[in-house]
Amino acid sequence: MDDGHTWTKLDAPQFSLKLYVTDDDDLIMINQDHGYSLYKSTDKGAHFELKASFHAAFGASMFHTVHKWRGWYYILIPGHGIQKTTDFEKFTTFWRNENALDMFIDANGNIVVLLYNFNGIYYYDNPENQE
Image (cartoon, rainbow, N blue to C red):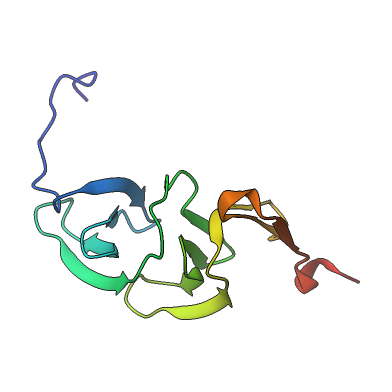
């Protein structure tokens, strides 16, 4: 280790606003180029490949976009809803809501979503935690 002295600049996709690192050390870059796009790098950022692109109905802060719970990654797509994936290769719609803006997942897999323009908050009570 060199105590943080050596850094490498990555040639990330243009307009990248959010970075996420998976358990396999893949880099996920999220940007608002052509809506809402997810890029993946499996070689420490040397190359990025577009994996998904969604139409975003409105601009977003993207503060709490990607969360992981029990092997699944949950991705909030502002103006679309929540997608889920295990590998950032194939995506499934988990919840469709065009006003979804921000998301949190707690340690039990319960999900809280804030809507655009503060039009409400939704709570998903994960059935895996109920007796």
